[in-house]
Image (cartoon, rainbow, N blue to C red; front, side, top):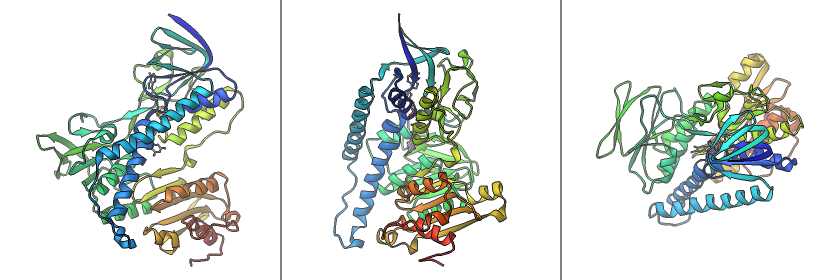
Length: 457
Ligand SMILES: Cc1cc2nc3c(=O)[nH]c(=O)nc-3n(C[C@H](O)[C@H](O)[C@H](O)COP(=O)(O)OP(=O)(O)OC[C@H]3O[C@@H](n4cnc5c(N)ncnc54)[C@H](O)[C@@H]3O)c2cc1C
């Protein structure tokens, strides 16, 4: 048995945990970062990065199929999944190497192994006791299933979907949220027959309804099938694949079923309850400053109820490190965290939907402008349709931006700046957007809301 002392012990080295460790070491604290698998966590190894690499391969497949439209003659010979895998793994490996170098360069002590919280100030990893005045819980999340639905065989999660060594012919995807539509988009581009089953009335149901409807039209146009508003009843596996049954009796046959119904907190058996941390259905409850009810113990990222996004975890990590160092950082509210759904088309949003803004400020105090990408030169050139909707308080700031179309995820930077800076459209309107860019669509919406539309009515 050995004991080591630090200013801070971080349990879990994913986006949130390593961000906390990096910032704390920058602020002069001695830090131990405990990780049972690989530093970088879900996002780097099984989430954000590998799936975006897959989506890029998917985009290249679509571009090569449609290249004649742009006067370029190519022959599309199909998907070489081994080559896609080596491209994807190469990206992850290089980012992983960079991250390991950064963690080392900051003087952080990385402790490999499964850690357990044993008191408000100790984490046990094998024979080693790590002791610190402050402990940060950052153990992340896992792919959830539905009650009674067992994962295994041809019923898979996103981790298995990433690791597939072949392109299936036909899949059913259970769940039309971000992860479900992302895989639907990739597989369709790879030539797979895809059906999404979503119990709620819309795909990407957490977005503005008008955006969800446009998204559904775009997916329909791409030949991606979906069933909305009917719940999943069960799945049977046989030698050929799966038969999926819905509560209305409809059945779908496929090679595989991907379960993409959300992510649960990885907190079971880690000592949190025993130490007295207040939990709710496996999630760790914190105040707005990410402190748990146990003094000195903080929690962040996917185990804290709210949006499960890597950039929220990064920001949580920075926040907690600064809080512990006594810098009194500004509280992060979930509503103003930007969200991007990566697929073809993309969806990007930040802030309030128009309905929620009306609830908050009163219907007569809220107005919006919906700029159609048909009027945007760059969008026309790259062949995308879609829209950029800006919601503002009358005579007040921009409180929401909701976008759909190819590449609109890249526009979220300016949108989140406007919302978080509480900019008025009148502040943004005189600022110049380069031509021709898709970014101009945001500029046009701001101009229109400031009462001086240019390429719009
Ligand atoms: C398919 C997919 C695609 C995604 N795409 C995006 C995207 O494009 N953009 C985005 O913002 N988000 C995306 N996400 C979500 C994002 O990955 C998570 O929100 C983010 O990783 C959460 O960070 P975290 O630090 O809270 O947890 P995690 O990244 O899950 O890290 C937790 C870490 O803790 C370790 N750990 C757990 N228990 C212990 C223990 N007892 N001892 C030691 N170590 C432990 C784990 O091994 C893990 O490395 C995606 C997720 C998935 C699954």
